[in-house]
Image 1: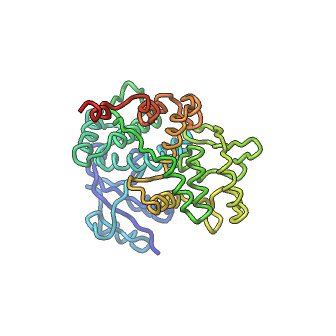
Image 2 (image 1 turned 45 degrees about the vertical axis):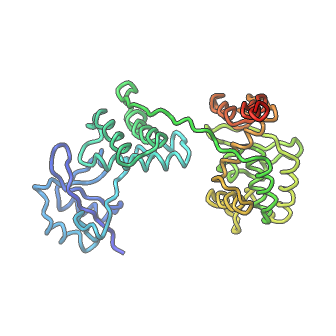
Length: 360
């Protein structure tokens, strides 16, 4: 199969150029350097030829024997992909950002590059970035959370990769929506576990709920993370790269022992049939199907089990500081939101409507 060379018109340093994009190929590179006045753009991460010097007929004669040449005008054949600055990805990996964060940042920064494709990244002004974000809010209806993630992906390039000072790059942040978490009752969660026939699926629901786990923490858990002698579960390198311990319940331990005897997982607590790590999507399906079987009407997802764990602990009088530690929250403010959904304090008060019957 031939390599592909993508040609597209562009602007580089206020000069009209033809951008030449291709996966690294020594043969193509040697021919380009030998026959054409090609130059490398560090900011755009591609080779280019000034449009006044570009001879398409000659280009085709020289390169077509070893590559398929696709002009950008031929949109039916290819979608031109933005090339992410090499240093951007390397910096993310060097600073040990999580795979999910790397995926989010690179995707959003590519959108940013594509929007400003006719400008050097170093020439983009703060006001232009603010206008870009505002346009996304108005036209794409992006959420406050996504807005902040997109801003962070842009700030990362200018501040972490290029080393600009923070004061030279200010962006107005959106106020976070103060949404209260959804919660299931203990009875609903128990029904979800009991109605699930697959022993592995029962363990997934029980472990996430009884330990207050994030979905990623459940699928990343190893067999060696269960300490049955001390009745503890170790959560390794969770959010913020922090380890923590949580209590292992007797009920969950019994389920896990039955599951191990039946399934005999090798490395991960939850493995697929071929022995690989269980997927996040599979966990989502397990939880959703269990909720559907017991006819729970509200929207159920894995994280609702974590919310329920925190709320139920609060309702039974567990100190907020312990809940914060078990959940792995850096700030107590994050944990305090569960005080707004706990029914413990509501039970102290009588609703005035209950007296109406007595006064009439």
